[in-house]
Image 1: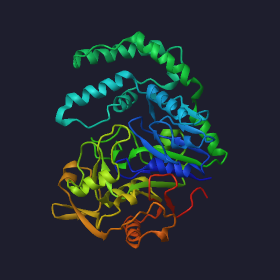
Image 2 (image 1 turned 90 degrees about the vertical axis):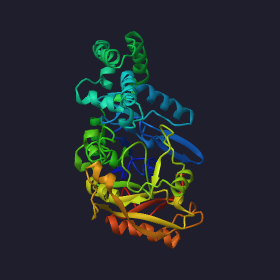
Image 3 (image 1 turned 120 degrees about the vertical axis):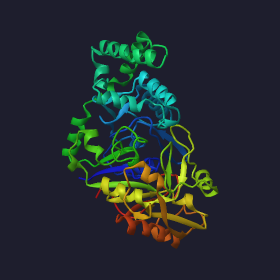
Image 4 (image 1 turned 30 degrees about the vertical axis):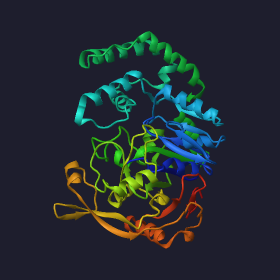
Length: 427
């Protein structure tokens, strides 16, 4: 049976949540495979807004098993708060499963993230200060605490040893106050009782789903250009948002994927620092930001906005093996007389369609644009592709011809139902 991965083909914030939610209606299981609560999905169903950070978007279908895989780093406090909010909104969390191998974001991770960013001054990365990077650092350094540790009798001693080390860093390097061991231990014992029923070996459970022929939907966080290896390093996240992260982040074999959906915003946005070739520092950029309400779900920070960059999308298609594009926010570009698409970078007089590794090259790149007529009027009611304005269809078809990947879904509004479906998934 099909296994479909959904990941962002730009810098995140592409609208992945609404497409995962849309596809979840046909999936049997929805699995989150990387990232932490530094990510955020906003989903609107029947006028109700749901904001998700750790829990997979499939939670809005109460019968669906939802899995937080081992590749995710989990802040227990944040997770519990999210669970409580969703319960108040009517969601059922009985089928939520949390990997016992997932690492925990600890209070000292959040504090170290904030202190490190503040200490860096102008050289700061622009993190969300949620402790994600320090948690992944400890994971790689073999100094992390996992969900299975939380259930173990040895947790208290492991926490004591690690907190002694972290308090030395906090006091000796940053000149701060040490964190209290007894208070932290009591806090995490409370988390243990609240989360115990959800923690399990999700790698085994997901493998059983796979062998049973269940339809599996994999949900990534952030986007291609925030990948630790292929993103605009060092302005990246600490994990692998691309489809390559699915196997590592779930314990399932690579063959589980039969389809890879790359979510592409009809323009480009990013949050934080780093070069942005098509950025618009003018009234058009402001118009896109306000019309699209381009403010972070997690941080509320205004997003930088620019024209669609197909150099980025082509790079994501190649690295991520994208088989279908989900195009979001077509409605946001409405009412613009002309829209532009970047088809190449001019770097020192040479035009390339490949995304460079060097930030210096990216920063010096000048966008090579192709210009299109805009489309006007409300398109949120349209459900058939042929019902879109001709200029909008030309825009879509140019994306297909330039990337070599078909556009299977088009978001024409923020609601779950406001989507044009051009192909079937899970068949």
